[in-house]
Image 1 (cartoon, rainbow, N blue to C red):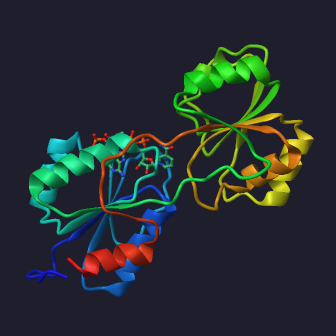
Image 2 (cartoon, rainbow, N blue to C red):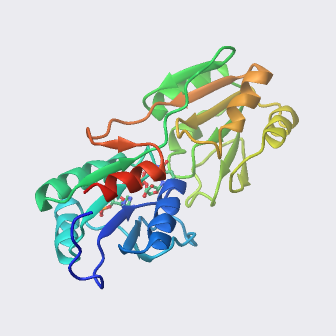
Length: 253
Ligand code: NAP
């Protein structure tokens, strides 16, 4: 790693909000030698706090992030934001390029459909809502709470909205129930949910990882439809899938 002249300063910025971000902050903090500051967007009211220093809230765009990198003498940035947090990814790329700070993307691989899966991949929620309106009756909507609006117009379908926190405001769904819960979700529970609520369609994002993939196995077993939103485009960057590889990248700087 490049020589650190002032160990009192912060050197690695983790753009977090994901399990990978927490795990990386913990690993860097425990390893010592560098200081870590994690940035969280501030969407969750009572977020789990990562090891090391934490700052919460948007920076105010790419130029402001570049200024933050300079002010705090950030040595390297790891973008460990969620695969669907693409705006932050583009901002990080622009800011790091402007400030001359190395940037790594830490991202869990996408899920891939396998034999027996009935996936319909979509780019936009409006396409997912159209598909649901045409083909579904009882839907598990597992997309968080912020992007529900296109589904609220689908009057004849019943939705089970699963999210960490309640939507605020709640879009005007005619037939919906809210299930507030935090993953990880176990296969036995996902099977029971699909059978018990007679779910015929799951709508979700291609988040990847193991915390929420049991629903896909349960959907395959039950032979029900999955409407899967594809990941948005992100900047071309050095990318790793695991914390160990991120540590190795940092060590090689
Ligand atoms: P986004 O669309 O990429 O970002 C929108 C704005 O939020 C950014 O321009 C930035 O504001 C701010 N922001 C995002 N991540 C930030 C971070 N780690 N630290 C400081 N500011 C951040 O992001 P999003 O989809 O709203 O997601 C917000 C956060 O929730 C992300 O950090 C992500 O890891 C986490 N998350 C997202 C999802 C999802 O499905 N999208 C799921 C799980 C967790 P400024 O331009 O003002 O800097």
